[in-house]
Image: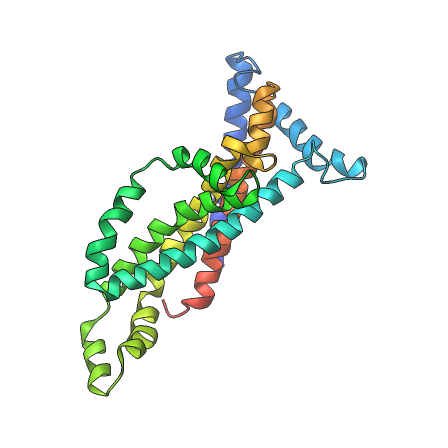
Length: 260
């Protein structure tokens, strides 16, 4: 408990310190607001996007920040689910089949080297301008890290435990489900913690290219309108969303992998 309180206090002090440095930098160096807006302008943008919309009676109004944040969260969630499922499935297949690994892994590695932002126009052609193309972009960023993490985690399971199970007549499926997967879960959750951040990045990247809503689309709209303070506000929102998702995944890890 003391350690948690100490960490929280340190984080708060660091945050306040950064705000002070930011404020002093804009005032002392006299930086133009269209280059680096001060904390007050960004706070005003937050108020407009999160508070004033309630006064208008519609918190999901086009100028509010709730709708784009919820849209990005939706694309992130489904992209994480799709990409996580594919990545884990392929990771298991590659770990269990040497032939499949030799055939598929080089192509997966080559695909990972392709800049994902370059795939966004193709995804829009294939899947349309809706949320599904954003979800597919998010899934693409999630799948490969989980594939590699799960494959490697399943490879390093203690061979003595596997041999002992087989000596008692355990089938290959039983060994996989009862021994390999539980032993690999800590490493798999490490991949999931990274994957949820990649999913968010993929969703925002797709929205930047062609999105009618979402954090990425709002950033492009604010850039067009030269609303730099609004852009800073949305970037802070995206950072807060990413930190919250990572924290949620860590809490889930503690619940599921409670023996580590």
